[in-house]
Amino acid sequence: MNLMGFQGGQYRPLSSEQVEVVHDASLRILETIGITFEKGLEDTARMLEDNGATVDWEKMNILFPKEMVTEQVAKSPEKVVLCGRDPKHDLNLSEDRVHLGTGGGTIKILDPETGEVRSTTLKDLYNVSRLVEQLDNVHFLVRPCIPTDIDKSDYDINMFYACLTGSSKHVMSGVNDEAGLHNVIELASLIAGGKEKLQERPFISVITSFAISPLKLCTQSTLIMQEAIRNNIPVALSSAPMAGSTSPLTMAGTLAQLHAEEMAGVTICQLTNPGAPLLYGGIPGLANLKTMGYSGGAVECGMMNAAIHQLSAHIKVPNYNSAGLSDSKVPDAQAGYEKAFTALLASMGGSNYIHHSAGMLESMLAIAHEQFVIDDEIIGNCCKVLKGIEVDVEHLALEVIESVGPGGNFMTSMHTMKHLRTEHYHGNGVTDNKSRDKWEKEGSLDARERARIIARDLIAAAKPSLIPDDINKVIREKFNILLDI
Image (cartoon, rainbow, N blue to C red; front, side, top):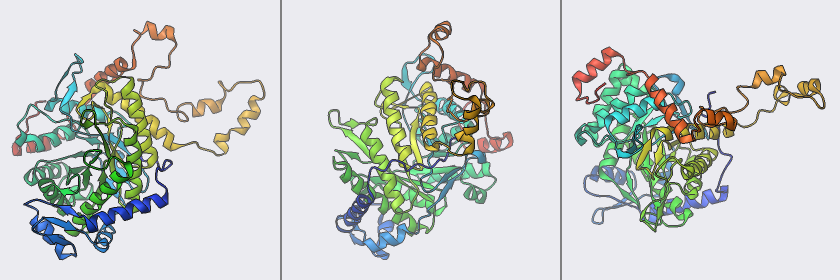
């Protein structure tokens, strides 16, 4: 059952009037407080100044006039299609169409064999990519972990290579610098059959954390963002303030600041290359003021991520945001309810590209194979909710009700047989619906153990590489590929 791309928008935490109030507050922030920057972004600031911004070169602060922001934001595409290498994985990001997938990048994994936490490796990234390839409800692959066993200078090319080797779904990741971006574009162009074909069907995209909240441009990430935009590679403009530390504690204040940061990023991109594809990347989070850490599983994260989609939809730009996180350290009951709440809220909010939705634990610090399988089940349920209830002659089944009659039963009717596998969501096998006797005979396994077995079997059955041998040979001759398979 394909449960991808259904329309959300059933849950709207902001009224239309509140959306206007927050949007106007964001424009006021940009016009009167502005965005600051550091050395290295002088050309970007000059570009903004030439188009109407006021730049205080001594304080290194940029004021964005409302008219300039409104004009440039309007140039951003209302619809972005992120492709898979296999077209069945194409993602139509428009209106309230919902897609959920992985996020990254963690530095720890619960070892699939021992269950003990350890540092992540390049082989882990490869195996998780192969697992995601076979989980139908995980719609895309954002590089889920950082390979801590290779040198940082080899990150960019090897992370994309490991993901593309293991999965034909759309792959998104960050890069360290502009040189790394060009290497990744070259790698993907080799697989696509040329750079123009890659731009026609972009099966890779880039995350750039261009904003350091509150209201500051990150030099390196902004330069990467602009370079990707110049090359027509889709970019997610990530900005992730935490309410209470890098944005106001109040949800409305966090949304206003974040929306201002996003509109500044969109303005820079559209001045750099008008009409270039991008995703509004607001990720409102919550600070745990008891630990000074991140509170990824809070229900308010789900509420704010649903609200931020309303703000991106208000300016007609597809959005990338976050749900499905948990503060739990293991796949337990806490992980289950935290993930279900935030994933369902963001889905019903209509967010277009919801990352972090599979595999994550410990507030983005760890992943686990079995958690990917459990989250595939959670996402499937979220998508089933979005699909809704079909009401037509066939589904009303009045003739069947008449034929069975009062006091009968429907278990043996042809209508039941016809809709048995499509009307209800049946999951991937991790949910137990058996009798207690049968469950005990099969080992009395809990959901985590069942998911661990499913993950092990899926990885064992996966193909070693999804890159053709001749192209793989060229890639390995050109780049320092470290994955040993």
